[in-house]
Length: 345
Image 1: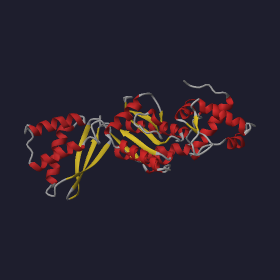
Image 2: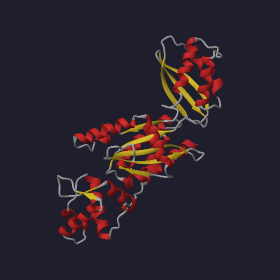
Image 3: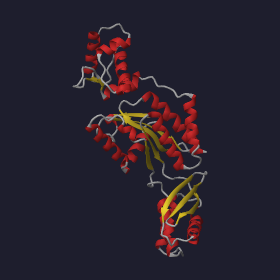
Image 4: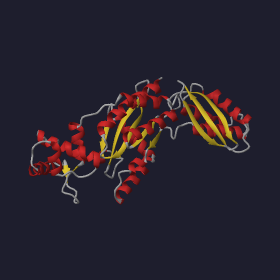
């Protein structure tokens, strides 16, 4: 049940949460009395803070007479008291330039987006990259050195994905060309899952007349095609930002658990599930998201869509519960729109 607060209580709660987001420290009644300009005595403010505590919006850490917001208090603030900021023209330009410099490379676009989100939000940035649902147009094998080749995949619409593949030292340019020719004859106009099923069946039933080296190249190349998994993958940048606010051993353990969770395959489906929940930016504070079994972290996430207006992935920011939500919301909203424009072009 959402409590009803009068104007004075709202002003004090807003000040405490704003100060907490800046410093992470408890806020005392004397500080509020000096800074808020309400002409209230510290004793009166303490009474209001006690009322807010009884409503479950504040709590008093045992080390201080000041107050900190509870998870419920932060949710109350986000839903009703927060004033959402806006991006400057320079920030908008920076987002567009960083994303567009990635060209048509999906890998580069997602890497640029996550790194930029981390830098602008002072938190960890993440992208749930989509599964490759566009038909393939062409595949090429490029020799990097005697033991490695670059697999270049051109999708319909001009998007490019690159993967590095380990090969044996006896792999010849002729074998690379033969493998590329074989795949291109069968890939054109097919999605990755369709192409993989067909090629694997041909090799299994010996319908494909390939020498051993070329057959191995084909199989390995097909295995590399999905970016991480058939359902997509997660890219996280700025993990060190999660450790910047760590002040105790238990905080370090929570950070370690979060970083471990971000590497698990199940996390990706949960993130996409969260993004599918509503149209636009969503905020999960503390344990509101099943990912965060241990409180202390928040996630703000925004879906991005394909040219067919289908949600295909998500971008987000993860950090301590004192994230600057009013800044992160417009940041994610604008970045998702820029990405949609690039992916749909």
